[in-house]
Every structure is written in C-alpha cells, then in structure tokens.
Image: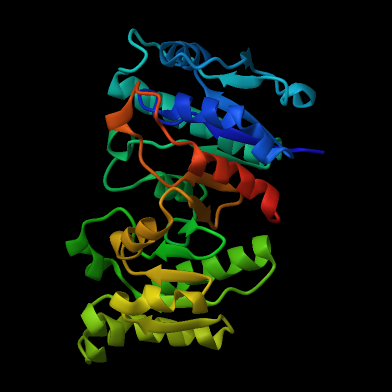
Length: 319
C-alpha cells in the first residue's frame, strides 16, 4: 500500500501552488507515495490558472485513498481573497495555522504518514522569533527538546539555537539545551534510519577561543559533549567552525550553535538538494529547505527539487 503524505499549502501569496503543481507533474519520482494538499481549493486553482499551469486538481474533504494517484486532491480550507497573490496578513495567519492544525490532527489519527509544509514567511504568521519548528514543538509540548535537521543523505546539519539574533546566541546556550537537542537527533537517527549517527559538535567562537576558562566552549559546550559521550552517543567536539566542513566526511551530521553557522556553508554546498525535518515530534514533519520566493511570484520559474526530495524522504526511510 502506498504511503499517504499531506502537503500544507504554505504561504498563500507566494510560490507554494506552483511548487506543488510542478512536483505533481513529476510524480514518477515518488511512485510509492500519494500526496494531497491541505489548503484553499479556489486560491490554488486561480493561481495555477494565472501561471498557466494545467493540473487536474479536485476539491475533497474526504480522503479517497484509492484515487489519490489519479488527481491532485485539495482538502479544502476556505480563504477569503480578492487578488490571488495578495492576501491580508490577518487572514493569512489564521489560514496557515488552520492548515497546520488539520495536518497535525490527521497525523495523530494515523490517517497520513506525515506532512510537508511549503515555505512560510514566519514574521507574518508567528509572534516573537519563532518559526514553524518552534510552533510545532510548542503544540506537542516538547519546546526546547526539538531539533531542526537540514537533511541530505551525504551530510546533515542542525543548529542548537534557531531563529534568534546573533547577539542573543550566547545567553541562550546551556549545557541542558545542547544535551537535549543532540539526544533528540541521536534518537531520530536510530528510529528512522536504524543506526547511531556520528555527530560533530561545533564550538561557538573563532578557534573555540582556544578553550579558555571563560569561554562558552569550556563552560557549556565541552561539559555537554562529555555528558553525551557518557550516554554512549557518538559525539566529537568542539570542532572549530572554520574547518568543520572540511572534516564532514567523518560525520553524519554537524551540530552548530546558531543558525547561519551551519546553514550558510551547507546551502553553498547542497543548494536545493536538502530538506528541513523537525525531530522530536510524535509525527513526521518535513519542509523544503528554501524561502517563499517573494522575488519570483507569478514568474513560473520556481524550482520544485527540494519539495520533491521532501516527498521522497517518506519512501526512503522508516517513516
């Protein structure tokens, strides 16, 4: 039986409809997976018409599992709009959160194997500095234990702190949060990939501040690493950030202390060939590892590669 994966439509005024339709046209790349959309049928239909993308989409509130492969079904979430690519922020926020709530419910009821959310402009939807990772973690009461994994078969990365300012990183680093997040990563690999990962943990400062007594490396990161090693987790570090990626062949995943420390070099290497996974949730949530494409709206040039890789993920591993 084919796996069933929901796609949360994402930001309703950007490139989500385009990405999904283009991925659907290449469904031979994920033959053993059936997908459907959670989103506004009317919005998606009108956006695809403007883009001149012809796709057989159908509205449905009942999952017709036997026919999901025949058409691109939309689990309809009503959205009021006048212009298909310009949506009121308040309406947009309510709409996206409603889509997520449906996906979470279907996941928990085991109606689907998990869900993928298309890119979202976080500042329009969530309060403070939180993104989708933190939103879903809070919904599952695991905030602080969740881990953002940017995944590729060759190498993955994970930041300990996520959507915060660089000047706030140091005061948000603790031995406990490093320990909990790395433990989550280890359990995720064991459960989904059936092996214990080799994990490289980066320091925070240039050259790890030479492990001086007052450094974060000496006070926080190294004690966390030692505690993880005592639990039998395969970790090494702290690694110096400027050379860590040169040694990446020795690891399955590199863990950094802040977002751009690992995401910037990673995207330079892998471009669209990576996906975003939230580890620690009671269900599988994946998303393409790129933004909402504000600069390419209505141009019909969005690349669906990362979305296709997100879908294929459900077919490759124990998910």
